[in-house]
Image (cartoon, rainbow, N blue to C red; front, side):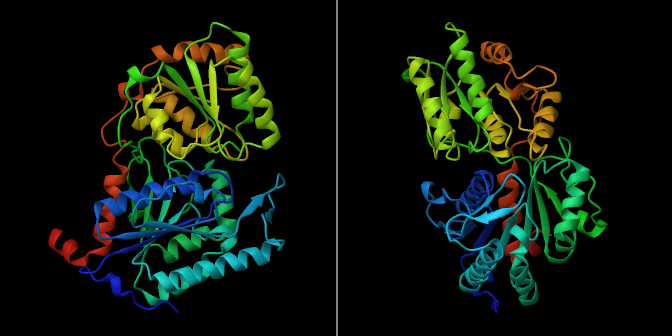
Length: 405
């Protein structure tokens, strides 16, 4: 049983736990790491602990007072079912093990605040026992964090109904933070949330990314950055970019390609051979934990349309062409098309532009002359981390809250 947390006193260091289920890709972990870093920087006494299922969590450097616990990994099959990655256990046993580890971590860490990323009930409902315990104890504030786009409204509504997510959102969460702006997109459109839940929603703005030191443009030749995010579904994008440089020997600028850690080994070997034949016009690495530095130094970006990549495009004000995936969700396509409508980026649309080598050559050639996002960006778009840290202080320091009110 979770006891009332001693650290809930405003005079003792705050403890923040972030749950990131991470069955595939890097997005949830990277967002949680960004939030934990901002929260602990804003409060030099606070600590943050991330629960994650990401198999590459150990490859990231975490700042002081931020740590992580790796939950047993699972893999999603093409048919939508899941299997355990390494333990030789069936998925029900693996989920039960993960759920017990979450419960134990909460009991030992006694968080003042739990921030749950995207999934109100966790992976296959694994978070529900902990949510029930925390709500009964009443000493931990619980927040649901949602990215700017989740999926098509009809698809999302059916999914949340199937998972019991609507009931969980109504029952367990003190606040819902949307890491975007309502004027750009409402991820909860189509969800039958009650007026009481909608009154607890906060639109934070996007989560700004930074680097410790801006790179000196004079120290490296101009380049564009190619990134398919985690890389698990980035084969088509990488193939298209390499084909463009192979087809057009005069294509400039040169490119720096980050495959992502989840690009399959056989596919990467083939790409490595093609990169080698391009004689330095394209350079490639498998994984870059501080990819923000590459964003900062790039002339422009060719990328897929994940949330974190979009935040980096906006944060470093880089002209970008987004090549969004359309399966298993339309999330990236919705984000990219809305951003293009607002003049923030360009999109390579399979139906409109064609996913052809010629289309990619045109996109790369025009990238250095394309307007940066700042030409169309409004105030507050990148205020998300400042907003979040203010909400954390509001939730965890009743004395300050009363004084402010």
